[in-house]
Amino acid sequence: MSILLTARAAQFAQRTAIIAPEGIFSYQDLLEASERVASFLLRGAKDLNQRPVAFLAPPGWHYVALQWGIWRAGGIATPLSLFHPRPELEYVVDDTHPAVIVGHPDYIDPLRSIAEERNIRFGVTTEALDYPAGNLPVIDPERRAMILYTSGTTGKPKGVVTTHNNIAAQITSLVEAWDWTADDHILNILPLHHVHGIVNVIACALWVGAKCEISPKFDAGEVWNRISRGDLTLFMAVPTVYAKLIDSWEKASPKDRSRMSGGCHKMRLMVSGSAALPVSTLERWKEISGHVLLERYGMTEIGMAISNSLYGERFPGCVGAPLPGVEIALTDESGGLVERGAPGEIVVRGPNVFMDYWGKPEETKKTFRDGWFLTGDVAVEENGIYRILGRSSVDIIKTGGYKVSALEIEETLLTHPDIKEVAVVGIPDPMWGEKVCAAVVMRPGAALDADGLRTWGKERLATYKVPKDSIALEELPRNAMGKVSKPTLKKIIESKHG
Image (cartoon, rainbow, N blue to C red):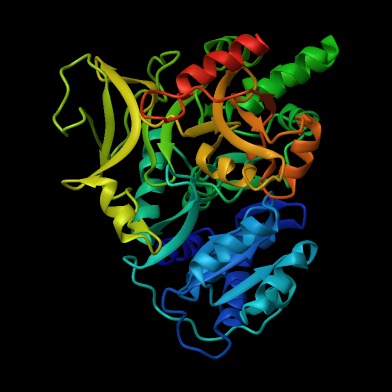
């Protein structure tokens, strides 16, 4: 991918590539900056030889130049999350053993101490961007390119490894399906440690020579101001963002509403993904913007796999048909194809599918059957259109566009001195898709302080993993085998909270 991206970038040399808080940068600027970054990482060596490079930078110019520089040096780009507290940063570093850790000046702490404690080389993005350019290796597109961490049913996140070819396949599939061109101009407000922002937005834009404008964080008012200028052609977000934009629009004056809606009318495509889109949100957004949001289905391991049509009818509550180059099937528990119209697990095959889980060969093996990747998601297909019914595991929660593991959250909450037992579930929520809720059994003499628990949790978990609601129970509901019954628990929480 780096070879293809850099070769393509040369075709668009003087065109604007990135608009970010740091300034406006051309494709030639990106090529030169990434060459300096790569030389900084190599520091005289010929090739990083597929060693991970962990990096932490806010969305913007530094992030993109770093990512490209890592690829051009022969390394594996491993973006860290701005939202992760120190223990979660340490987990990724300890799991990948990176050759270098690079941090933006605003995020040097705690990265420097993490690197020093492990005797790992540490660098600052400003140093890398100012480094003299040198000779770079030739990169085979079959090489590992990126590690993104995703939660799984085993608790701790797994590092999903994609090759340059995998990522190129994910990009070209979307470019074809959504008709990306060099005339496009997209605004990114998505986090850049997930495939949604990295591939669907930035990589697709840079593949075709388009403009990618990067906002450092999401602010509904700022996004509306930007949309209102009327020069954007695409926008992609998660359902929670659309819910917040709707709320902001409804609070605006009639004059501002007209300006905001007018900006939407000038776009050619607006996409929603990473979580189920409530039909009520889709319908209200259509009233406000004139757009029927295009829903699609994907995950870290496969990029995007299914999408509603760009030009044809879009079906509320459905994710559409397989994308170009992607094979989809629905299977039963034994791996056999289900009858037409019957629910089955989505399995995926194609060049878009990831290589492996970093350092976890057994975990990788479990998720494949006869060359098909097992998604764990259940769907039904009617007339070639797929509708997602849910997940085969109750321990994965999709909240605000993030996929989190209930087991990982439970493991952390159990380290609280006042908690004896805990179970975490996702409860349907119009704003978040699902909100993380915890049921706890307290130790004798202790009482649940929900606000205190959230404060404690934020020091140990990313904010979106911290339970939004907590209830205290005398005991957790269990089945005959002694396992917590999460369906029963969900009913208990829903009845208590309405």
